[in-house]
Amino acid sequence: MTDLRGKPPGGPGGLDDAALLSVLARYVGTARAQGILLRARTELRGRPATDSQLIARLVEGVRSFVGELESRKAFAELTRAASPKTVEAIEIDVKIEADIARARLAARDICMALGTSALILQKLATVVSELARNQVLYAGGGKLVIRPCSSGRRCMHVVGSDKGGGIKNLPEIMSGKYKSRSGLGLGILGTKRLSDKFEIETGPSGTRIEVEVNY
Amino acid sequence: MKTFENRIPVIQLWQRIVVPLQGDVTDETAAFLVDDVLRTIRDTSAAGLVIDVTGMWTMDSHLCHVIANLAAAARLMGTPTVICGMSAPIAMTLQTMGADFRLAQTALTLEDALERLGVSAVVSELEPDDAFDDLTPETITSAASFAKSAE
Image 1: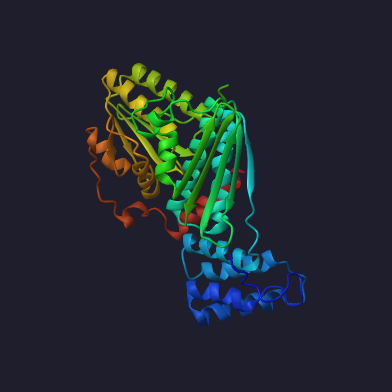
Image 2: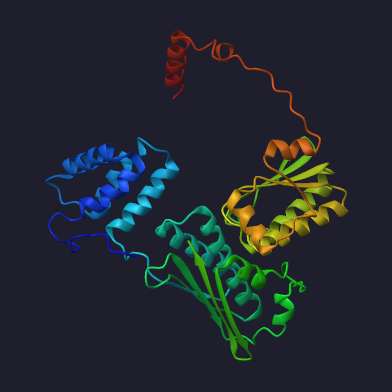
């Protein structure tokens, strides 16, 4: 992700107006964007204001011109413009059933922070849910790491690893002929179909699945 | 354990059953749901079951399997099932995965689903003026003062 901020964080003046304006302008046009920013700055003048207070004011301004959904997107983009490195890797220990829900909610959070589309959010949440469920059901637990891809590529990277006994009938599963006792037999195959890059290593000492979803 | 949080309402409506799924349905909640719904079907001899997924933010293959199984079990009991309200991103995701919902019928909205199950609505036009006829400034004031005296 490129750093849109011109000035160092915490420096005088706080956020870079140009970066914020370019985001605002995409939602409400340049003239209104300038008005919203000017008003927010004026209202907060003379008071110690954090970046998030300013962004909250800006989103309020945007909201009077566009719908709720758009303003939420604007919020995500403004947050990103303000601090390009806020989205960091999330690591989830998956042991029990409740962790499956926790994992997919974490996937949702990361997508919302990155401002992805609803479809990508859905894909990633499903991928994470499938990986986590397999770990709980067949490997006695495992670990998931979700993070944005490195080197500025617009994608998300998920690694699921466990120390279970490995997947013995992988070819059968991948051919789509397999029906599991707890699902449609689509956990791994479905994950592969949903992802843009899919790698699997499995053996008696555990399984490691690496997935990328572009956005 | 069955608690208030992991229960999903099972609504009886004109001899049909409507189940609105919402938010994040955990495996545990889904298991209770199947139990609740099948029992309600038996107790009420419902003529149809609607599973409304409008409020769900995600559906994975396990939940699909649970719903498909529920529909199949309901059919064994003689009750047809219609699933409605699937969002575009969920539909696209399930399609990409290759999930199969052939065991149940699907409909776009709750209205369509109920129609499939033989419920048709007669909607009479509501004249806005009629509905608010009583609300003249005087009646509003007297209602307000009545509410005050009742406090």
